[in-house]
Image (tube, rainbow over all chains, first blue to last red; front, side, top):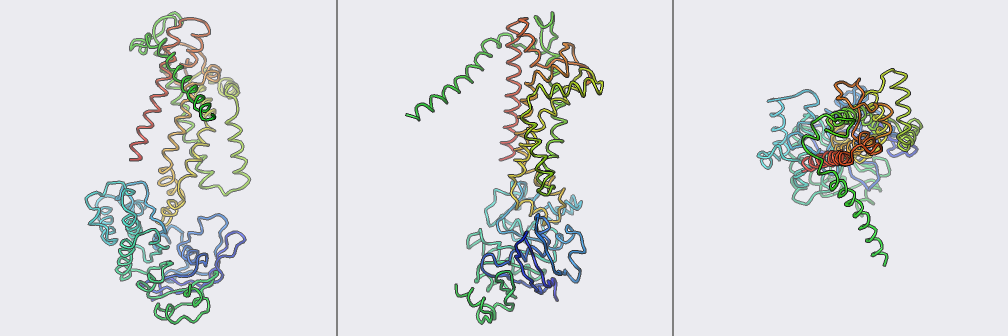
Length: 244
Length: 265
């Protein structure tokens, strides 16, 4: 089943045409990896999926993006972002306790008390962080290690029970052990939700992805299973990119 | 060579500061007793304490901050978080900067003509507070804008990505992370308001009675100090008052730093 469907998506920053007509279908319960050289538009495309460009003055998005068949521009951006979570390149916990970080999203919607406790606990479990932090939920989140912080950010996103999780190079600031932990996590999360992962690591794309999409100069040049795209690429841009 | 000159200069500055504090302590500490703080003045301040002056100063600075902090932080949040960069923002920012350079006596005159005369508040703590609020507003806006601008964009995005509206992002994340800077601005403003003399003299008057409401006139510590010194009423009380003012401002500063240290922990 297709969870997110993007058709002819363009993004402009001021006068610069950054994304030039990308169409991509993202299946549910799977990992779609977006790869390509720096500045190819993969992050720009990712950020179009939860309307993050709305926050940037001078950014314009054209085209059609559907989430479960609904036009994402027909709903308030806040509602969309509850359903489409995001994890960023560098861990960005708030200057609050571990508990308050995970509780941030649900508490915006008035969830309190035992219900909130349950959501925080479940989210930390799903992000494979619970055992490490269960005894210090009220400690400052910034005291955690980088890898733990990134898993906390994943727990924070999962607390909204999203249908889709967008991950923008989530391991680029992490050591190999933490990267492994995030990849294991991706593997288990994809049983429940759709994951879109921007990565600069071919190894990561190969290990985690069910579908790989290659971007080049603002265009999508090739899509397919990792075995096909990474081993038998057909687009010359992919061949060139993989040769680097 | 230059190193010696510069370190000499630094030493000189430090010496002046220590000398200033030393002078105030040497001449004022003797008169600084519990009774001085808590009793009414007698014979126009030649004798007795400074209770009404302390009360008036608390009213004036407290009132000024109570008005200027929400206004100033709100303006800064608007400029940084809401307004699209453009003409209006540029004009507002230029105006704020110009306002910061206006001599305080002009704020006093403005407050006098608007609050005291036009609005018929008379010489009152309310008129004084309102005038001081206007005077410190540019400082608060500037420091708040800087503090807000220093909050990493990633944190705003993280909050927005969780479904927070712009207002929720601003209130729950941006202002929270800007808190140390906001507090620093508040302390700067407090120092200026507590030490302001001319503008207060023009708007709150110099009545030495114990104020019981914001509509009463009052004499701030700085004004009291000015009057005691210029009229040669009591040298020991002049310095004791000055010492109280210094310790109060330093005390608030220290308290703020403690709060910040705890918060940063």
